Length: 174
Image 1 (cartoon, rainbow, N blue to C red):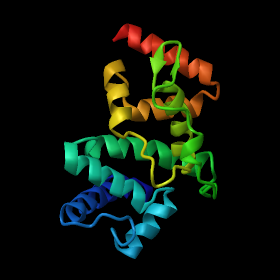
Image 2 (image 1 turned 60 degrees about the horizontal axis):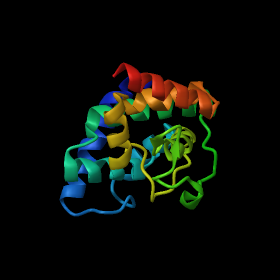
Image 3 (image 1 turned 135 degrees about the vertical axis):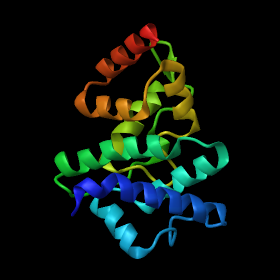
């Protein structure tokens, strides 16, 4: 595997997915050629990830290929270095996540975002959920946090309370 070529190939697949989405392809199945799907899987990613980015990018211009690449580089790093290149084989139940309106220490969305980020790291998000969806982007933008930075923080910090402390401190510095 040519690890050095990952950014360029990911960008090409992001662009291809956006083109196909714009042309009317609305499912992960068949969005990309089988060899590209296999390459994504070998890097801990899926066509669903590209479909989600294509859908949001086509609708709103966000998160865009740069933020998508940054997020997926963190996921890929976790896949290779924390999971030993092996998928977990699990998918979380979206209904078990806290509600969008739930708050911790006055911060709405955060109780939902932390386990969602942990599931993203492990490659366990169901097709119905996207890390860095519109609600996540609004949360990050309001607090001056890069989505990939948050994902990396969640990887480094297993204690949810410390993630909350960091988010509150970041918001105070914004």
